[in-house]
Structures are given as C-alpha cells and as structure tokens.
Length: 171
Image (cartoon, rainbow, N blue to C red; front, side, top):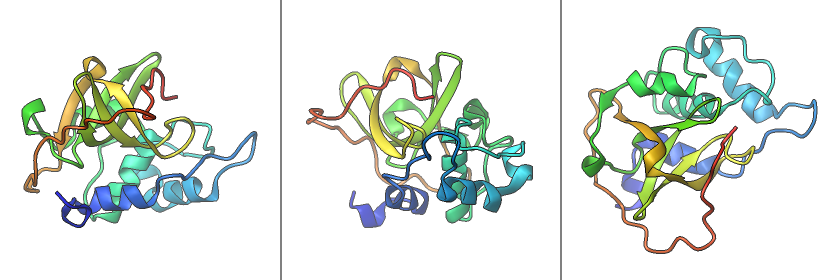
C-alpha cells in the first residue's frame, strides 16, 4: 500500500508527526487548536492544557480532518474501544484504530505495521509528541475501523525495528 492509498485520517496523522506539547505550564497552540475545533461536545470535557493526556484528542482530530465521527468522550482513550466496527488482528490495515491498556488508563493510536511482538503505532502523546512507537501486542484491547468505510489493504509486516522504541507508558 502506498501512502497515497492510505485512508485520509492516516495521511492527516502522518502530517502531524513531530507535533509536541509545550514544556512546563505553556500549551502547544496546535494541540489546543485541535481541542477548540473539536469542542466539548466531541471531547466530553473542557480541554484546557496539553498536559492532560491527548492521544484521544489526536485520533479525534484526524477523524475530524477526514469528516468521520469520533468516539463519544473522544479524549478518553478507552472510549475508542467501542467506536466504529471491530477488526480482527488478521484483518488489520494501516489506519486501524488500536486501543491499549497502560498503567493508569489507556492509549489509542493508528496501526501502521507490526513485527512479531509489537504493533507499530502512529499516535499522539507518545513521548509528549506525535510519533511512531512500538507497543506490545499483548497490551492491545481493541482493534477498530470506521463503520461504513471499506478496509483497504491488510497487515503490514515490519522487518526492521532498530531505532523504533518499545513504549511502556504513553502518558
């Protein structure tokens, strides 16, 4: 699958790689702009600081850019576990929404590939930025796809994992 044939939400996500939250008490105008554009109805809360976990906000922003609905209370990572349609592990394709367990909560991001033990996930709030990291498959609690949208492609096997860290806690 070429990048041009990837779903619109994943193409948008790729454009945001490198976006960082601001250090200290400051806030990233980009991240805060996503929150403002989405609003409290979509996010389920008043989002007023990029120090609040923002992986769900990132996924919601990418879905908004593709004119697709978000999970209810989109800022909560685990809310994405009931969003869209279930997708089995053998039917994953780039852009699938993956939901993970983590200490103190959950994490959500987009499938871009996998190796024997980890999914390669493009997500927000991974090291306080939008990045691609490896997350252990055993932590994955849901694999989802937008309802009514055809799944294009299939699993992507990543043979080279050097330099792609395994994340242990995305908060």
